Image (cartoon, rainbow, N blue to C red; front, side):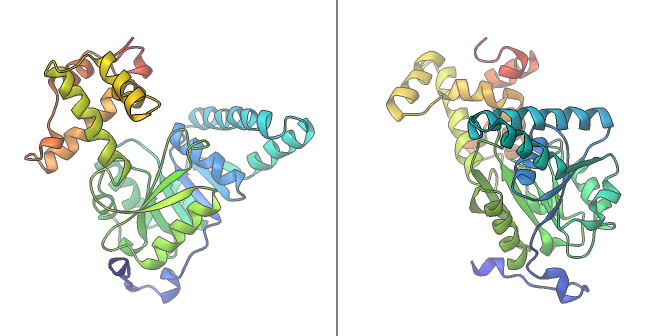
Length: 307
């Protein structure tokens, strides 16, 4: 773990790089991932500010959190409906919303973005917030595919920048990938690990490499299944059945691709291919490109590899 011990105050007082106990959290992005992270953080006693561009989006986010909590309560408080309602209200009290990211970050221990997978937009966001957030505040990205170091480069807090990659649906999925760049301090990394554990998640330590751990294995697996089908070596149905019954997977690679989103997979592979064009694992697929061009992106559009 020696490569994590990059400890430089960079002109701030040493308190700026102390072990931060994360209690106040600002989440930028009220979509499915942002709202899911907000729900779990609020459920575990953290104070959460959820930020997006409009009040309408944020109302929808809070409504989604409330609906998800009601499903949790049905199981957790089946015999105690009053306690369940009390739990919901307590969690919702820990969530506030804002359309002003600048003011929202001013008392935050952690700023976590869960916005569109676009490097320039993420860099612009953090570059602006870097001037407004307190010196001790840790910045983190929920990106699934972009290099954390590239996102962090727009800030002056490279030692207080890391990755927190949650998985969808956040309330159900236990895993969090905690990513350190070569500049992330040990204190920052420890704070992100401890925060993940405080949320009831199981963190795994990752380096800032393409896809981290899960997607670095999962995306090439799905892509090779597509290529296998393109070569005429198996139908998509037979490949899915083979992996479910032969490997014990709950979904085959084509079912999984439709669930993840074919446009999402293409975006990830295109990004990796641009960085490492000679790597055969990152080679593009004509079939995948064709389906995405036709708007057949999987479950979210009603059709992908399957209808």
